[in-house]
Length: 76
Image (cartoon, rainbow, N blue to C red; front, side, top):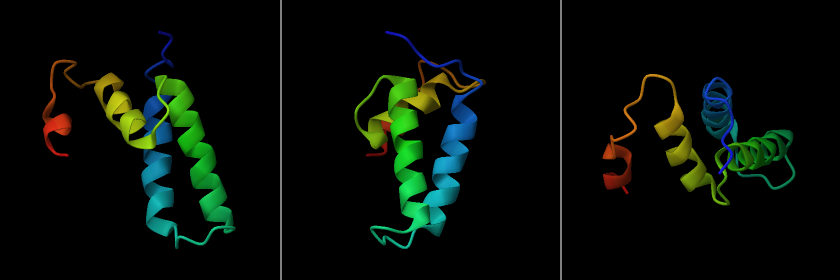
């Protein structure tokens, strides 16, 4: 499977969390549209189809993380 370069992932993850704080759950808000764009980018970058899976995959590929660390998987 192709994966995005790890240098791309931190920016996408940070942007997702920053936007999710601002999101007021309004369907047509500019923030909501940008969150959806970042979600699509994260899914494509990680080869997943779900934002939760994309965030987990991104975390495991971020620089400085241990690929065998599954602590994020146990949190759900």
